[in-house]
Image (cartoon, rainbow, N blue to C red; front, top):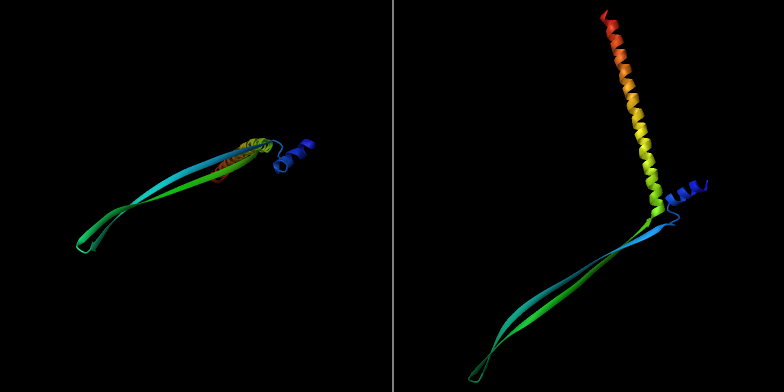
Length: 125
């Protein structure tokens, strides 16, 4: 009786006595660098002298993005084993019923052929 109750409790997931925790981590590091060069020219005139100034400006933008995803799976091995055993027994039972259905269908065909032959011989006279 205890074993039957234990199976039902474990199937319901109420008691995880044989548990494995699986942790997976996924880290993505992405570095983008954008450089913009801006050239400018400035002209100034003082009295009779002209001053021309030319300069360039570099703008550097860096972006660092880190995506870290942690997934945890809790697996109750006892529950998995019980459910696999039930699945196997259900498959065996389904195969047995399939065999019985095929046998009954074969007998049904034989009965219909017999009735058809009887009617054919009866109406032929």
